[in-house]
Length: 290
Image (cartoon, rainbow, N blue to C red):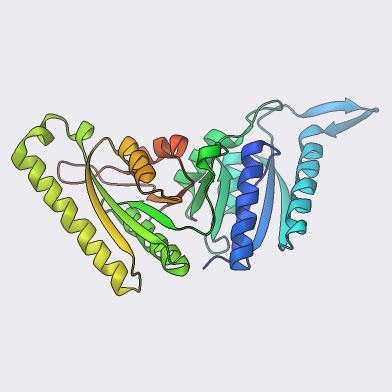
């Protein structure tokens, strides 16, 4: 399922944590890891050194790639590497062509200048623009989870993106014998006063239960034996985070675009909020446009 993993690196702690996580995944799948360093040409990088003009960012990039290669070599992981110039957001998306890259693994914070990290807001841009799955890894101690996974959480709203996320999560759960938790959320803050009406609330909850039951049946038909469903009412990001803690999830798998409306869930614009504070790694799945 995963043969080629792209890992943007910048020498930061989050990027290094993402690299270590990607190496574990590559070791499990027998995959190749491509290391990518982007010399951010949006920032001034030239300086004088011993009478010659040296591109500091590229020099730093070579050092970062060398360190990353050493980490991969210690685990006997096959690697390729590339150093490019440009806007990190666009360069990473360009490198993550879905016909070649099966998974992108990134830290959720990174540097945005010569002295600061670039991979924080960059990750959110890549999540929204990339057609390949993107796994966002945080460095917080409580966000470090084991791989392979034992419990996988999928918030679902019936959208194309959510269904694609479910398919990917089901493959992961089936491969590793993990429990798949399907969660549908009646988004109380978005729906406002309407959800407070008992008939409206009851209908929304009924719709949500039918949705997760139908999706669970599809997963079981495809060979996924251990599937659990739940319907919750509340704010989507907070509910996803709290439920992930409740079921001891090792991974959250989400679509990057969801639905809005009185009878539909609202996942798309909340994905970034989950990314920033989720207690576990978050795997996001987009849907190609057109």
